[in-house]
Amino acid sequence: MTRVALFGGSFNPPHVAHQLVALYVLETQPVDELWFVPTYSHPFGKALAAFEDRVAMCQLVAGALGPRARVSRAEETLAKRPDFVSSRTLDLIDHVIAEGHAPRLVIGGDILGETAKWYRWEEVVARAPLVVIGLSGHPLPEGSVETGVVMPAISSTRVRELLATHRDDLLAPLLPATVLRYIASRGLYDGS
Image 1 (cartoon, helix red, strand yellow):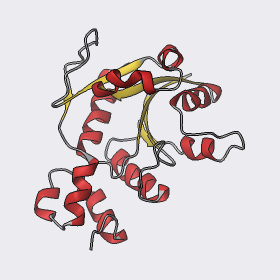
Image 2 (spheres, helix red, strand yellow):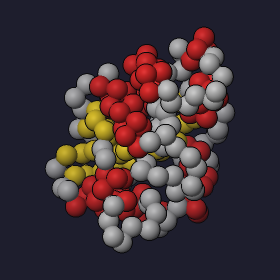
Image 3 (spheres, helix red, strand yellow):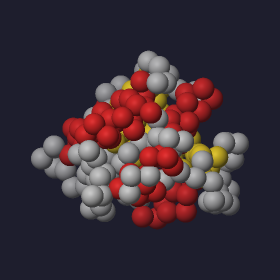
Image 4 (cartoon, helix red, strand yellow):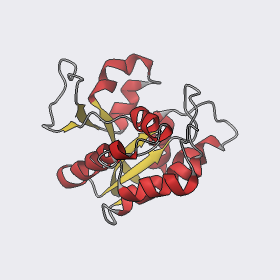
């Protein structure tokens, strides 16, 4: 049974903080693999780059981390089921378990303050033990286990703003070079 860290998100686009978190999890947690799991569509209806583009960018990020990091298209598989309602983490976890894997769930510490919004949160945690990553500027809620690592304060929203205004001088420290080249080649997030 493969022990898999599920690292889900919009990845719109994936940035260096995502890559740093993935490396940290692979190097310090009891997992065999880490899967980037881009959401197929945003659960709250936010606009996203095409799923194929986000998968391709995640593959570039994962590729730099070696064979233990990969990209899962599980959210696409789930979204195409006839009984699909919306993107729910519990459905993803059940899907991964049904494939014979033992999942762990990688989340940012800010999520712990929002668990009331999650579908059947207690079952999510019971089936996929958490790997909680601190976020710069967001204290962990009381009772959280401190991992000792804090993800840099980089947001995909800020990256998209810089891309739309062609602030390439500020983007280099925020995006892996391969992702930046991919975005440019596809004309993604161009605000003009």
